[in-house]
Image (tube, rainbow, N blue to C red; front, side, top):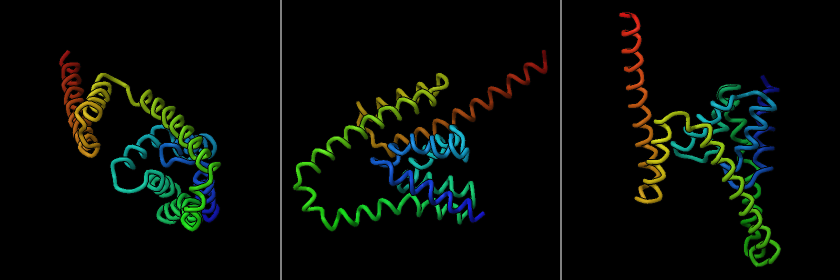
Amino acid sequence: MIKTIFQLFYVFFKISICTTGGGYAMLPMFRRELIEKHDWVTDDEILNYYAIAQSIPGIIAVNVATFVGHKKAGFIGAFAAVVGIVMPSLVIIIIIAIFFNKFNEILYVQKALLGIRIAVASLLSVIAYGLMMKSLKNIFTVCVFVAVIIAIVVLKVSPIYVVLLSILAGVLYSFADKQNTKKQEENDDIN
């Protein structure tokens, strides 16, 4: 158990220190470390964790670390994973805060930040495409996807309302699908 706790801390520390751009930019590292290398979660689980993490308050990466850590080692595992994911950022932010005015004036730092922003935007695009391809499974998911894009881009609806309405749509769809399956089974029994 202690080995698992140290592993959780180390893996999430490594993910945090090696990525820039927040929770979505961490998804490729999460996938490689948590799914491919350690087999702690599945693709579906990580997508579910991201969906839940996006829907609840808090930082996505911290929420995902909490879920994975809890799955592997309960409360202590969740705590170790959260400390691992937060520690590098906390130390770096403290250092930057101390020297921010001096860093901000250095041309190389400005250019490096520009390069980092471009890399993060590229990573987010790849992640968004991958999530979209895994999530669009049927006509219902395609309709929700299109409705969300229209609501956010065209109608300028707050993402909070979009997420809440998407949750409601998913629950209603699940209920309707269950009813439809039940009717089909009854019809199959009659025939």
